[in-house]
Image 1 (cartoon, rainbow, N blue to C red):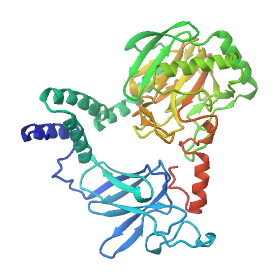
Image 2: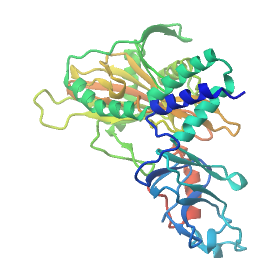
Image 3: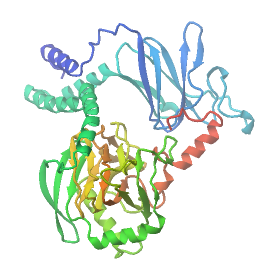
Image 4: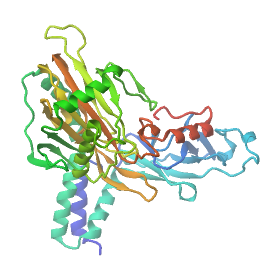
Amino acid sequence: MPPPPSLLTPFTLFLLLLLNLPSPTTSSVSPSRKIVIRNKSPSLITLYWLSIPHQKYVRQQTSVTYPLDRLNINSFVGHTFAAVEITKDCVLPDGFTKPYDDSELKTPSTKICTESHFTVSSNTDQIIIVSGTGSKFKAELDDDVSRVNNILDSVFEVCEDTECLRESLKVTVSDLLKKNTLEKDIRENMAGLIEDYTCNDLGIDTSASLKNITWKNEEEIERDVKVLFESKNAEVHIIYDFISPEECAEVEKRSKKSLHRATVASSDGGSEFSENRKALQASVKIPLEKPDDPITLLTKRIYAYTNDHTNYNLTLEGQEDIMSIQYTGCGINCDEKRDRYMPHCDGECGGDEYLSGSRVATIVIYCKVPEIGGGTNFAKSNLHIKPEAGMATWFRYVGGMEVEEDGRVVGETDGGYSEHSGCPVVEGEKKIVTQWMRAGVSKEEPWDSFNTKGLKKKDVERFKEITGDWGSNGEL
């Protein structure tokens, strides 16, 4: 039953005002628009502009866009585009250059690649979602007005009275405020100032907690926990007495011979050295075949805590090794670049769709803390953590997680609240044990069968066979 016009109109106007969005009947003075194409299909895609007067396809890419990747373009209101699905058995529209050689096929294909059209609207903040494959391949516009209309539809679908609308509006407004562009811009601009302030204030203590709880697992040891931050897609906890000195010593002993300069994820899905991270690291294998090994027991504790505080239901098989990381201070008056880790996210943290097989949570366990410096910052969440020996910082960065019928894990990454850093170590040593946790991995498809962008390496190789010299659009 549709709501009465007197209720629909102010409700719509309120949401539009709250989002700082233009009315559906208005358009910006400039006809230019920035468009983001997100490929949520399982196929490679490429983009054509349709020159309607000349009835021509004009290719917009010299490359292809991989699954789960995105393409940014600048266009104009009224322009129409074709998103084209690239497979090994099709040719591109109007006989345009193909990303493969037909001579490689026993029977050259005459099948035209599947395509779906979309037109740039006058609305702002436009995202084109490409999904499906074959007959279900489609490109759909997702812009400011359509998002508001979707919100309205979802609210009015379940509400038939004013009280229901009022309660639904509370939730909707809360979510919108957290995602509001202005609020996000302010938070990100302030984060740099908070980072500098908290890292330079060598006497600052751990941020106040939202609530204090206790946790006890099968070891029957009760541990104190402080919850510092909570949101739909992110949380930050500190857990006291999470690791024993003996366990710390065991991790350090097993990692000692393989310590090397720490790396960060690179744009091509691999890893590289970076000035943003100055430390030593070494991985420590988890001997799951030895259930009473101290490293195995520590790992079980980590995953027990995570599964007890999320719906992730993670398994130990296929996960990354435990990582031993060491930072060393060079003194108050040191002129060298200090050991630290600049602000970063351990997984995707742009509020986008979660990539099955990638990281969902992290635990940082402090074995040795420096005399001065070495705190952990979550500047966009306005949090600072002063480490204590034996304590752990645990945080997650994916919400709404579900498992699809094909085994893929879906969810939504947080919008930046889990971005964190390791403040410079001034004096002393900081030795930590870190575990990065993933969903969608298994003994058959372990963590290293995915690249750092969340794509299966075997799929990347298969796509390269199809595309030849085209390559990706540089954002893989």
